[in-house]
Image (tube, rainbow, N blue to C red; front, top):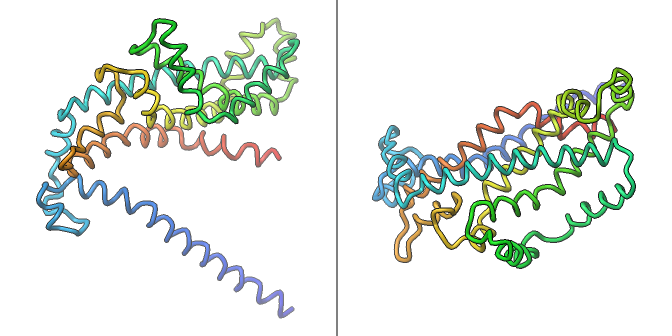
Length: 283
């Protein structure tokens, strides 16, 4: 009886320790974000004279306007918006079609195709940059938006197909069989039955691939010779000079650059968490 009575207090201590650890971890994780926003609201000379997190003028948004126009940062930002929308749309469409076919349709050699996709995940992405460069320029797509978009789609497909196929495999086959009995074809089943059920998985691949596309810079640096096509990472580098760095503008531009990611995550947070936990729940 004594051991049973002592369990609640022990569990309470463990709970307090867990919550304390999570609070400390949250503070450590959020501090760089708070410091970045604080620095973006300071004047240039204030960065060196005011080490505190609270700027003298908390409503100083001039740095954001200056950062938006400085060094054509707005052009780089809109380039990344365009690339992200086109690439994510294509990846969701093609990966969901491929995953549906590999999971639900009877095709000769589909297991071999699927394992080839999985094998490509073991190859480091920078390891194929030379091959991508050669193929792109042989196709006459060098220094063009399409020459950047197509490789990015190809690089994003394997992990997306892997995630979506796992979800398709878990779905009840009775749903598909009932639709076939009612006269529905495979594309109708995919578009009107499977995709709505697949929203958590789609939200997962949208967020994961958006992070990858939005932060990508190495491939763009290899394929583009014209700065007008460069993504947002090039825009952030213009604030770093050889002899000086405009930290207030750099932090303002960085704050602007993370806004789309935060908005997308907030809109899809529920579906994203469902997608990440679905496998554990089903298991």
